[in-house]
Length: 168
Image 1 (cartoon, rainbow, N blue to C red):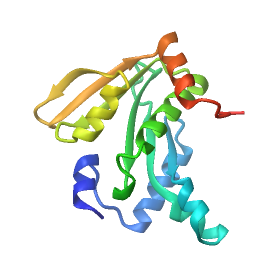
Image 2 (image 1 turned 30 degrees about the vertical axis):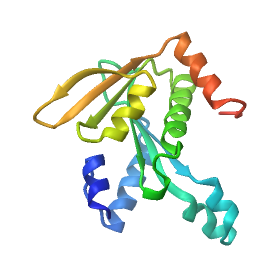
Image 3 (image 1 turned 90 degrees about the horizontal axis):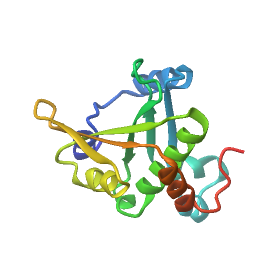
């Protein structure tokens, strides 16, 4: 595993059995949501049908709805694991799609992103999506950004994802 990616995402390496256990726990936990980010070009380029989707996986976008005092607040995070896919818009599109889904299907009214203060690409991404800095933790070297959902944000997300037919 790429040590820079682990540092940027605040992750620890997992064994295959640990990864399966984590994925199972996510599948049954209604307070978590994950989308796998695929590169359609990788599906179109090669491989048999069975291998194409796995080869096309480039990252994931996740939601955590763990604040019992604010049940309509979700922490959102994005990881583009494939270095050759970073900076190509995959993260932006995935975050926008997840936000649109969370607003429409989960009634989320506020998003938070907690990002390492040296993860400049993620900080830039969320700030460019109108998230505002609300705090900095020197202990965790982490910036917390937030955005409140309003009609303007909802319309901007719908506009940015265009004609995609979501959630039908």
